[in-house]
Length: 411
Image 1 (cartoon, rainbow, N blue to C red):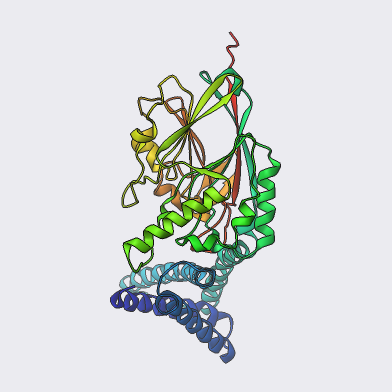
Image 2 (image 1 turned 135 degrees about the vertical axis):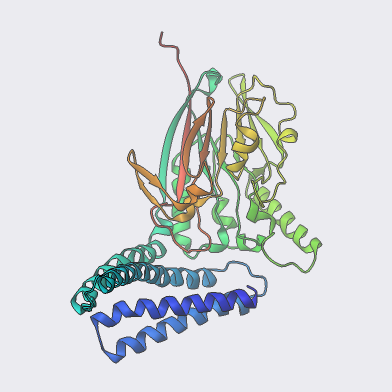
């Protein structure tokens, strides 16, 4: 981070800290509270600066770096909430005081009892994100959920009625810190006994070497008709510094070979024919294509070479923005697209049938779960792993099972 940005960030951090401390001070005048508050704040700020600026010149997201960031969020976000509540009370008190003064009543409107009450409310509210973010790091990141959908299609070949796909996405192996939990999740994928397993990108955070300790674990995945994969934006190693372009290219080639060694078939702007009882469907895989500043290595036209409009097609494309930009209205009529990338922001609220919300919805139109438009579907997987914040709150890691069904005419 440039020095000017650090100076601005530190200034904001100090202002928030000082303001938030007012709430703690109204509840306790003890000197030890002030000392502990200052020590924790300085340690958190120092750790963040050290991890982001001085530890590991490659800038890759290591578990240590993510945990520092996670604890920073768990403490700083509640402070922001405290500041919001306290500032709102100060603003109200200011306007009431001004109104009273100009109205001829100059009595003080500062009431310690009210300030204490507001501080208590602020700290109580702040305890919610504090506890949630800590829980997300301790348990949420490995709280795997199996979500199942049945999708009906008029043009699905009869032989594929009841055909099952298990989708996983965004493994981000460089973030893992618990082999037992990851093995449990891999076994959970295999327990679905799907006909095919489809991985929709981001195997690593940046480096192929992140898979060294996990290659044998993910080699255990198996499905009758195979395991297919595509690349995600993080797989290209674009977010760290390299000594040369050749080094980056070698890293990508090693990652590709690792997937092949695990028994996965990596689709790089190409397609495969899946046969069953004399009938076929087409599986299409594109490299990463994302709207905005994301990598656009995906070539849908190349990937669809030899594919007919009448074929039943499943597309694997890491970034769901690709669906809105190129896929949804494509003349080849791509019936089902599988994506990932968003992670559901690893934070949100979901109550089936009532609410599904995450801040990421303001960035992506299709950000988690199943969507249908123009008779075509996209499923956006919430991700198998995690990145940045080393946890999940509300948006749990996901294993998706999709059953293809032939739509029957009941007339």
